[in-house]
Image (cartoon, helix red, strand yellow):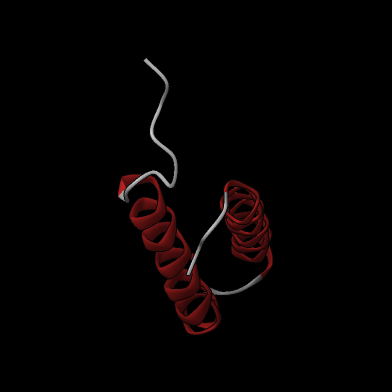
Length: 66
């Protein structure tokens, strides 16, 4: 669960790293092997993306000054 802007930014960096891993893996693995190894990574990406959406759509801790 993301609670701060810094944690959200870190989650975005982690997603980018996981995507790079998947892109590299597609180049060296067969379709079958890639599908098997990618599934848990893709689930992790989805979960982190969902955490980001929840954080960004949640209430702000401090109201904006008018």
